[in-house]
Every structure is written in C-alpha cells, then in structure tokens.
Image (spheres, each protein chain N blue to C red):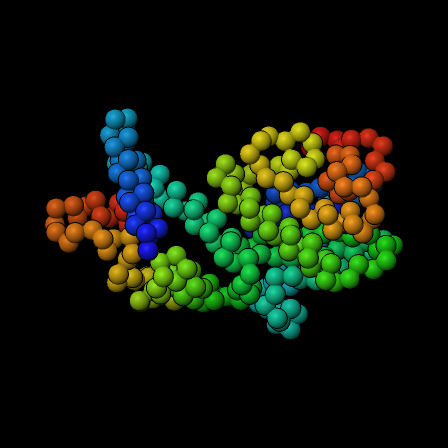
Length: 121
Length: 171
C-alpha cells in the first residue's frame, strides 16, 4: 500500500535529518540517540493509550507482554513478534525477524551503522 | 450530579481535579485522596474475587451519607474518580459508565496532543482562561446538562450548574 512507503521514507528522513542537524551543533552522538528514543517513547505512549482504551484490564506482566507481542505489534507492523525470551526476573527480549522499517534497506555492509539508528526509533 | 471529578496519575498525584465551587472543595479533594486506597485494593491481584471481570470500570468505591464515589482505571494505571451527590435520584450505572467512557476518550486525546508532556497538570479550556493548544476535558458535560435541564453553554462552569452566581475561581 502506498501509505506504508510514505511513512517509511518520512521516518528515514527524520532520522537522518536529526543526525545532520546534530553535526552542525554539538558533536555528541549520544544526544541524538536520546532524542530519537524520547521521540519514539512519546509516540508509543499516545499509541498505547489509544489501543488499550477498549481492551480488558491487564492482570499481570504476562498479559502486558502478550498484548505487546501480539495485538500491538500486529496493529503497528502487521505481524507478530517472532520470538520472546525472558529470564523471569523482569528482562524480556523481543525478536522480530523481518522488521518492517528495515526490510526496504539494501543488504550491503555500507550503511550498517546507520541501520541501527533507524532501529532505535 | 457529579460534584467532583479527578484524574490521577500512575504515581498517585492528581493531573486534573475539579469540583463544584458551591461547597468546601478541600473535602472533595480529601475524599478523592482516600478513595485511592480503595482503588488500589480493587486492582491488586490479591483480592481475587473483588473485581473479577477484567473491566476498566471499578464501580462504586464507597458511599458516604451525602455522596457516592465511583472509580475507573485505565490500562496505563491512570485513575479517574468521580464524586456524585446521593440526594439526586440514583444515577443509573450505565450513565456513570458512559461518563467515564467520555472522560477516558478525552484523556486519550490529551495524551496524543504533542504539546502535552506526560505528568504535567491538565488544563481544561472549558473553565478558566486556558492556553490554546490544550484540548477540552468537558465532553462529558452534555450528559450532566441534559439531566439537569440546564442551558448548555451558559456560564463558565465546566460542571454545568445553571445557578452560578460567580465565575469559577482560577486554579
């Protein structure tokens, strides 16, 4: 669908635009990553409020993780999480083998470090 | 009629609290504060039989001789508390639910507002002079006004009491 490509291009532009503007100002790479993380966090907060408005109340952490891996991921990325691991002490690792925001990128080594910036977002 | 509405954040501090100015507002603030304990009890997993249906609406929290307190919790652990006058003909459960529903919708809109920082006080432009850019948390007023038979849009009071002799005090 056309709107997927639109969002993808806009998203990638946002990441590279933020990095370019940082190069002119201060040279700290860490600040960019923090800014990207905060943007993503804020967008996620709004999305979650909308999605959980009609769902049942979550009883425990497992419910929350199931919601994220299935419903949330399906609504945003149109597929479910492929692998979920936990150490039963509060750490969860979510694995997505075909992350939608990265599939359109070429699979060479040239821009490997930049791909991780997109991933943060 | 609802005499006090409060939106309380996950860390149990108020994001928005508004009560009818005809009475001692401190009393309502105190009632909302004490009802938080009841809310916590209902949502904890220990009380297994209390609210077992996994609903967001918590129902009547506790009744006093003059007022009844109703609660509602969102999935992000934000609580809505409403204090209602008992002397009125008993409001049906469905009406309270729909009032909470509208409040939830308005709160979701506030969260999606990019100019709103989560954790800040919520300003409602339905009451005192508000800054532009903050959405109005007064969409549930039409329900109240219809029941009261009041005139919509009359006076600045967000609770819709028609016999307001003075404007709301600034917050």
